Amino acid sequence: MACAFRRSIASQLSRVLDLPPENLIKSISAVPISRKEEVADFQLSVHSVLESNSDHSKPDIQAQVQRLAEKLKCDTVVSEISTGPGTVNFRINRELLTKTVLQQVFEDGANYGLKSELFSGLPKNKVLVEFSSPNIAKKFHVGHLRSTIIGNFIANLKEALGHQVTRINYFGDWGMQFGLLGTGFQLFGYEEKLKSNPLQHLFEVYVQVNKEAADDENVEKSAHEFFHRLEAGDQQALTLWQKFRDLSIKEYVQIYKRLGVHFDDYSGESFYREKYREVLSLLDKKGLLQRTKKGTAIVDLSRKGDPSLSCTVMRSDGTSLYVTRDLAAAIDRMNKYHFDSMIYVTDKGQQNHFQQVFQILRLMGYEWAERCQLVPFGIVQGMKTRRGDVTFLEDVINETRSRMLENMALSKTTKELENPHEIAERVGLAALIIQDFKGYLLSDYKFSWDRVFQSRGDTGVFLQYTHARLSSLEDSFESGHLRNINAACLQDPQSISILQHLLRYDEVLYKSSQDLQPRNIVSYLLTLSHLTAVAHKTLPIKGRLPEVAEARLHLFKAVRSVLANGMKLLGITPVSRM
Image (cartoon, rainbow, N blue to C red):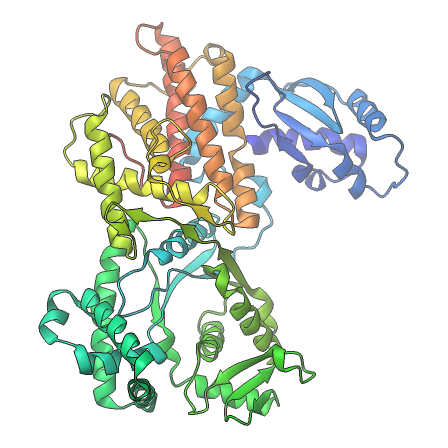
């Protein structure tokens, strides 16, 4: 794969530049394919090498490029050396490229690209990823979809890279809203409705009690009293709260099952309803806790008495806040897991909240606060079903499956399927995930059903269609052993473009491991699928000489393998028929 070629190029450069080969590896990158012209396979950015060199006398960069290229020689690996703007370009021996890439794809299987020297020397860490985190006693809101699929991708990627990953679902299961909900259920709740459709009924109760509280301050007062009873450990209040929590989790687990997402730790703010007092005590001992005239407790983040830079950590009635419980959770997780990094996946509206949490941890003297990271994401606009505005994720998944079933029924290429509903749901979820992951995570985007379900555009449907088509190809033709293929049969431009693209997969994984952006992998897989669509037309298997058919079949098998690997990292289950 790319690693063997990079090492060979770095070895020759090392002798010419008098630099250790390992210092050169990351300056040698696979060249993105071009539809206009055949390109080299690798390029060295000369500027990056000069920067790392102790010799700082830099005449014209292009003259340096030319001189370096003249000192290098072709060998059994490199068949051609050329120059570009600021780069020295290397073309790999074509038959060696073909055999090496295919061999590596089949040998490494699910680990293809992950064994690259780009990842060598990187420590294997304990990583916590907190994501999804819906609010208990409410139906799973569509707003939590992004956190769920982004967090799942990050956890998948970290796991694939060999880290020890713990996936945490930190439920919003404590706080003033339960004071409102407890009071609301006592006023408007029905046990029969709670049994038949729990979260829908609790949602209706919550909406009604909020309206009442806006008009009647006694209702709001009752809500404060109910939450105060919860924090004081009142058994009657806790029993009602526990019932709401258990019913909620039961329904959420079904949603996660449909999404193909799992967690190692289901916790929640309620776990820290006692421990928050320890946080307040620690803040007090360190001289960080201040009382206001209203009776609230604050931490001065400015350390200079600037009231605009203070963070409230306790209400005047002594009850805890979201930030206090998050502080307690972070400290508890370090004690429990001894993590090397902890990643929170939330919408960008919580950036200020987490900045305050991390800053308070630092003020408390916890150096590991530097290992806490927020991955914020933008807002999805305009997600509606045919019935109007969408609130609940279940409605979106059902709508996705329904629309996909309609599209499949109208398509001429749809096969007879044993499980059309399951296939439609998997393809539909792929469509949602790719629509979400195509841009930068921090960007807001406008949702479009029409765009999501295009079968020939840059969509999840197109990825699934490509995978199913390649699976069908494998089922139709038997393939022999890789050792017997004739690499000379894969020297046409379409085959070489695919092989060059497969060569780049480790760099794409490396980039995503650095910036945690799924868009790198999405873009790569879409390009791979477009290349495959062209090759499928121009490189037929049926009716060709056995050695040509065998070589092409192995190429398509390699594509399907890498495509499936990438899709699984993104949280997509590939389908074999559709």
